[in-house]
Each structure stands twice: as structure tokens, then as C-alpha cells.
Length: 355
Image (cartoon, rainbow, N blue to C red):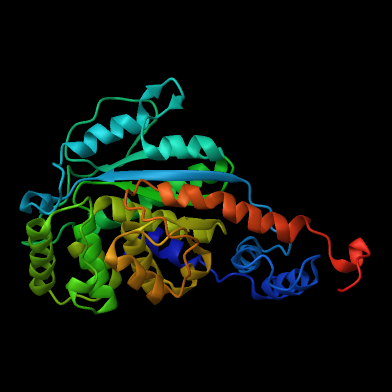
């Protein structure tokens, strides 16, 4: 393992349990009926452990969109051609009347004041120069996971470290909530393969329609996942990622690991992000303390991921877009959860009877 990756993993410590206990005690004394804020209460307490403060005050939100292409897309596993990936990267970067970026993630990010970063993690085409494009590509798309390892171990670790570097940049820019996002035609196929192997379940339980493939497309997709898994019995988390994953998935893993090491909260978007989280928690279980799932997406394997991670989603809106859109939507809920714990008065402080 690359020394920098070894050091990054070793630097991740669990959430502060003593602070969590103090935050729970404070939560119980706030001027409201017990449990009246529902899931916001546990979110706030968990954020206290992440930020090591019984009155957590997260502020900036950053969504980090990593884009990559996949050799397996040649097998007809997606409803869209690979040419969509580079076109969407330029859409993320486009100038529009509303501001930078013309994709859903850009529009949603503007509504909540989140900053969008865009990384070429391994797009299968040459991209024009753009001052806001972060170039981290080591190859134009992965190899076909049905036939061979999608990435070499060196390529995998390089992209993990690139994702980590981008989080350090976002943190310097003031981000406390990190939203890993992705763009890559065909990437729910590697995500399904990763999930099936890491959870040791039949691929049919975690392989969905992605961008909306028809029944024939779904059959091809499931066949591709089965072929990949039959090719090698590897179970080591990083080996599994290299065999079946994608450059953008590796980059998102690095984002999650670095955010945890810096004691920032990671807002999980959907199924592809969930596959990166499974790899991360298998590598370092303490990473789970820093993961806050947004919504349960429409992919059938996402619920299985969240169950395995023992994490409860904040909403169910039927999202299946990716880009980090669900994670950005969830950011205001987390900020509100922290604000209630931080800013509400206790019964004693307010002089309200009943505490």
C-alpha cells in the first residue's frame, strides 16, 4: 500500500464518545418534548462526535463530483452512451445565466450555498482546458471488469489519494460538510459488483436499472456483474475495488477517508457512493462514524448498503441521478440538526418549567 494511503487510514479515529455523551445530555434538556425533533436529534448528537463539540457548528458545504468512464459500458449495461460523461463534465463547468454549471447538482448547490468541485478522475475522452477542472486522470476509462481487473492497484491508490487531496482543498476553502458525488455512464454496474462481493449477496439482490435500462439491458447488466464476480474470488477491500470498481469510486473513497481524518462530516448520496463507503468501512470501521446518508435512492441495492452500514436515510424521494444531488439536498437538514443542538436553550437556561 502507498505510504500516504497507509498514513491516511491510520490517522482516522472514531467520533468523540465523551462529547457524544455530553451532547445527548444537553439534547435531553432542550426546550422541547423529549424526541420532538425526531431524527434531527440523533443527527445533531452524531455531529457533535464528529466535530468534537457538544455544540457543533458546521458551516461550509462542498460537493466534489468525480467523473470517470467504464470499460464495461461497451456491454450495453446503460441506457446512455459513454459520450454523455465528457459532455456532462463540461455541463458541470458551463457558464449559465444563473451561475457556474448547468447540471442538477449545480442548480441544487446554488440553492443551499454549496460549492461544486469537478474532477476528471478517468473520463474516456480528452476534455478541453478549463480553469475549474481538477485533472486527476491516469487512464481514459477503466478496463472491462468482465474480462480483467478494472484498475491496477497503483491506479486505484492514485485516485484514492487524488480524492483525499481534493477534500483537503475543500476544507481549506471552509467546507465542513463534504458531499462526494460522481458522474460516469455505466457506473452502477461496478457499484453492484462491489456491493455484491463486499456484502456476500447474490448480484440479483443489488443490481438495478441504473439510468433506466429496459429488461434486456438489466439482464445484460446482471450477466456482466456475475461474469466479473466469477472471474476472481478476491475479498480484500482494496483488491475488490481495483477488480470491480471505477476511478470515480476510488476518488470518492479517498474523499471519505480524508474527510474522516480531518473530522469533517461526509454526506452520502446514493448507490455508487454507497459502494465506496462499503470499501471504506471495510478498510477502517471508524469511518462509519463520519457518514450521514442523505436519501435512500431508487437503486435496489442501496437499502442493502445502508442496512449493512447500520445507517438510516433522511428521506426517500426516488432519486437516481447521482452527481451528489441527494447529498446536497440533505446538507440543510444536517446544518439544522447542529443548530438546534447548539442554539436552543435548555429548560434551565430559559426558565421554562418542565425540564
